[in-house]
Length: 580
Ligand code: GTP
Ligand code: SPV
Ligand code: MN
Image 1 (tube, rainbow, N blue to C red):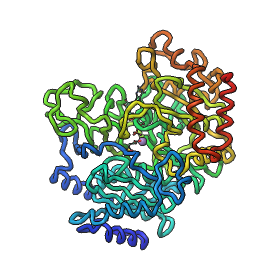
Image 2 (image 1 turned 30 degrees about the vertical axis):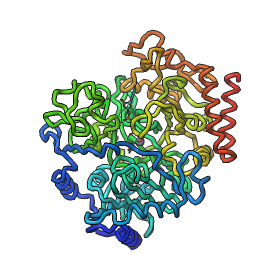
Image 3 (image 1 turned 60 degrees about the horizontal axis):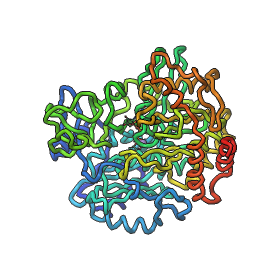
Image 4 (image 1 turned 120 degrees about the vertical axis):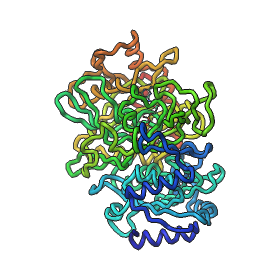
């Protein structure tokens, strides 16, 4: 197989740079996947797991210094620094290419180079987009098989000869000193070298479907967001679709497939990480999941916390950096059973209790979305699903109530822009530090974030009825540091209130920051919270918010005059309502 003339031309250029021993075009077939797996079992890239309890499941161990996204090595290479904005690393395109050409030159010598044509989004959808990725990693090819739609289907969706995102990837020597993840949004081009892990290397995901796509979406009038998509079915059988942005390792996968603790309610999964959202001809937002699989966090996935997640990874799954039991089964912290004797840690060494986590905190599973028991029957509908509400969630031990609703669209965009979160193991660096993460997009916005806020604001006038916007925080803690809210399956109670608000009915009280559930309006049937816990989870603390607004002012100021006036106005209105 080969693609259009433009594809072939680019592949030739790349091959001239990287000098591979041969070029293999991926067709996305099962035979090809099986061959890749066989090769990787032979050379030790994969280990076969217990074929009785985990059929067609494999374990991969990445290089110990290559276990999470490296944001400090990730760049947006626009013509001007201002177009990348103050929250992105920037390098001039010519300089970036010169530096990386040095690393790519001859990097595939003696080894095969795969060309992976892939489609992001359902077949037949006008919202879907094409990429062509080149890589020297068999693990990446197999992962792309699971995460995207690989093969001829990609070429069939090209709207012109050069309608594809170019992605060049090489493992290089895996040294963080020679690792770069470079984006050229103006050329729809990605160059990634020196990492074989996750969002650094599976270029269809963060690099294409978020960083390049967000820039493309701005030009074309749609949205590329770090959001799950779910449908909440109520006891009358009505399904309301919501999209929720939450930072990395902060609950999207869990919420997207949550098993309801409320009788009569059920959640259908459309996507767990990325949403592409368009305005249809009736002024309604419609979302598709550009991905075909889940690359989800393993630790804390259990039959208790995430029964659908636990069930779906029992076959056809590639695990990366989890621990291994003596019976060749994967194991991670929070899985449920106690660690068995003779456990092997994520680096392949014997594990002893007290020696730190056996599975890497950012260990993950890669699994076809189709295997999720709650996958929505219409998850690949080319028209997408109609979005009635947006949720912004983050990890905050303090300040942010369990749930509240924005006054209107502009206020909701302000709340999204105001998000802060405690960092997780999904990125290298310190865990648990509060940082600004507007719309959970700080690592993924391929252009100036002030312009991104402006883009969000621009939808109000294009929509018949803009979706309601909600803010959630499952992670608020009490004085002793304990979570105030049990989370997981109980989060359906919050979804229920949100859908009641959207459909009319759910009761709320007005506070300076938005509408908070009125006492008794959250369904607490069958739930026993500690006395006072609900009040504490919903409380709006004036002093904490005053400080938050100060921090926010500092964050906004770095954007200078590019910051939309509506955001500053919402900030000022909040201060005024707080009596400041
Ligand atoms: P990315 O794939 O990195 O974008 O992350 P994600 O947002 O899909 O994260 P995921 O759902 O995998 O959440 C990962 C972490 O959040 C795990 O440690 C979970 O246990 C924890 N988590 C998810 N939901 C809840 C919740 O409701 N309450 C609490 N306390 N923890 C949660
Ligand atoms: C995230 O970090 O938000 C992820 C995992 O979804 S990765 O694909 O590695 O970026
Ligand atoms: Mn993510």
